[in-house]
Image (cartoon, rainbow, N blue to C red; front, top):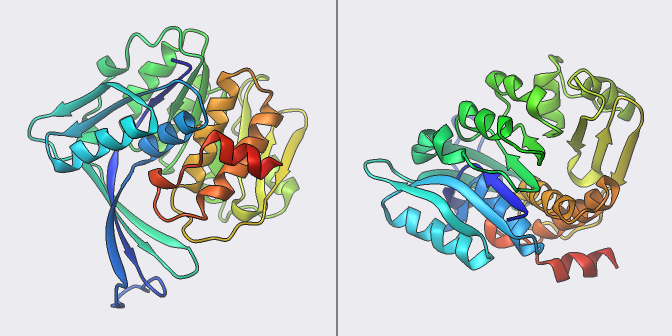
Length: 298
């Protein structure tokens, strides 16, 4: 397989609301649905739909939610041979509120994701790209990256966790948003100016061959190296739901890099794909196909 995603699988319980509730506020839900998600599952679906042979390393429970997640991955074309169903553990679930403006608030109950072991992430030689996030144990991802065997190791360091810093020396491409960048760079607030973003990103670079990509939402993304940077501008989108847009960026970036594309070309594809994903509801189901991304790029 060209891409191997080591990460989480969650069944998303999505509630549409006019506006996100403030602390202590009760609001009326407009609708509720169950949608396949989880950062790992979303990224694997995005990579596979972009055309890259993709495998998933993950853990689910022996329950209905787990069956839904497996069916969703297979439908996207993901190899699920390394997804284990654990007795006595619930499949992860995420509870998501989505407003009329497309903004969201999310609470995740990790369940079986927290039981993903280093042994399950062994024997990954021959993969071109390894892609991980922080909704599963850091030790498991650390073992996978250490055994990377020459693969490009991409870490989407989300959610931001202090223990995630241990993975930085093993990472070739780090992907964070502005809030996560501020957390890892020990800043009081997310940087806004491009120059400040670059300065903060470079504090996380420990090798000359490392890159930090900072996703900027509708403003696009910027890749920062010790010497120089590359920015892709955001693309107009008819936003319905932003859930999973960052995951779409990560998965498509991994897919294109596995095919030998330059970082600049891969970022252009990932940026276009992320915008497309916001135009449909849900996370994994909103990941665009290769043909849709190519059409958006013109």
